[in-house]
Length: 239
Image (cartoon, rainbow, N blue to C red; front, top):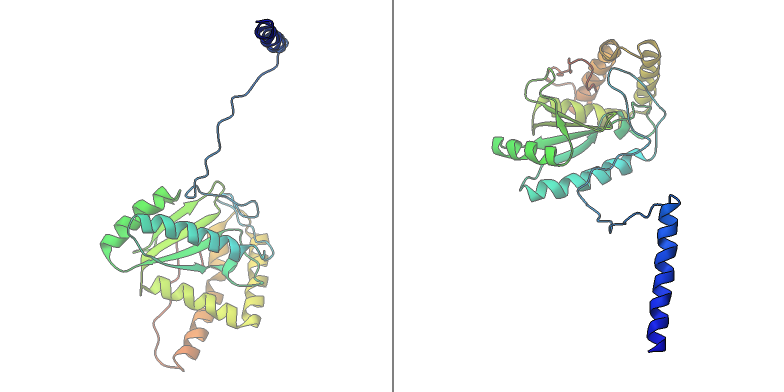
């Protein structure tokens, strides 16, 4: 009996201490267990570019890893929607050593129209915002992050857009002199047109056309080749 009364007294002392702390302004947070969501979009501090601006930064060795992490995340979400897109890392962040705007470009290829429809729903679930064609017929443009960190281009497998981007990426990967010249051009244009993406893109057009022509000349051994389809949409994305 005495022990029981003593226990009650101890509890009373604790309650008095707690009420005193509350009165003095202390707050006690109710912590909930943290639940990890494997589908939750993650953003990275080394990425990000405000809309309407141009900024070219030195190559970051983290870019390929960031692409792979995003590809794996997207693959899981797409599979849940019964979609299997052909994903590729494109743009300048896909070329080792090349200076680039700090945005990861992802090229996503579909084969059937119903697959495109399911993919669009899945990408929105993954945190991507659909921005329409942005001036390129047959291309659905998505972006993620504020400021934007990831661009995704949803196109048909076999399209000229897809072919041009893969050809240009591989040409820069295989031709260090071309990559160096392209980096110098981009840095100069970014300094000159830091708030004018359209003029920045226009300034690269001649180089891109020449690079595609050179790459296809090698690929086809001088044979006939299709004209490259260069983007012409307010600078949302360029080769």
